[in-house]
Image (cartoon, rainbow, N blue to C red; front, side, top):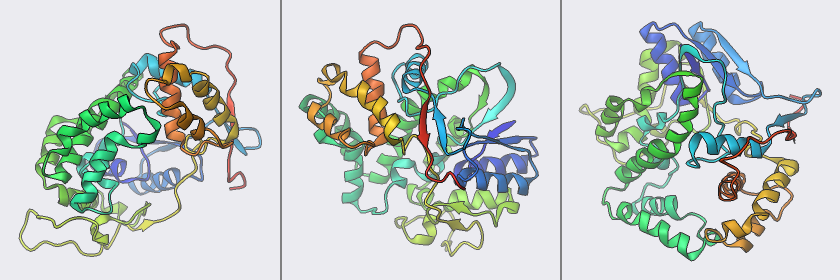
Length: 360
């Protein structure tokens, strides 16, 4: 088994599970050596005694910049594989010789933690959760036309009417993010081999959804499972935010056994590194120019969806302020202007994106 391993919670539990079950596996991590995912994944693999391979992106000879595939090529591959259901921001698995070795990743692992929409919340009041439901459909309303905002409002209405907000956001994550957006991206992995997706098994999802959302959101569930399956990982830190059940961020919880309340975690410490640099979220001026040229050059096609002046404002700075939004607009614009179906783009140059930490 090959496990795509990061330093986070969702792939860590899979490494722990494979280890406990005695399944032979090796691990791979994509990224630069300075990225927290690579550093922590290497520690996990070492503790569990499994092979670990780091796949670094192409770089300049001086290693002061990464060489990025032209966005037009990424968009063509995304449209071909995912039929416009996800963005060229996402990395779609490319063709390689087919391998019969099963692969596994942590995609959709937030199911065990009440979904990524709930995890975005620190304020769990009814008003704040209602705002999150609305924002999921109607974020950046100024960017969109009145017709587009009305369509979003109609989609949001039945979800806003549900009384249990935590459950609503939990189910929204399963319905849209897992069931639609991630589903399209997963199609690419079928071209390379046989993926095994434990977090998508209907029995796993049913079991998770049957548990109290507050308890799952506290992260005590996944925390306990990691330590139970792989005690060897108890001292390997997790980068980022502390475990929610130690911060009091979870709502009033109903635990499945009497008198149980979480205390400070004795193990699995967290550390804040500020995250790792990514060319997708820090595109630099050269990549921004490519995104800008396509989007602003196809405003007529985008006009039924977005307000042209707001789009121009988005790209007003040398480096776009909202990279993910820029990638989404880029993808939609290539879809609407007929990039696919058609011949794959040829002879497009790679884009150089400078690293902020070339000396490290």
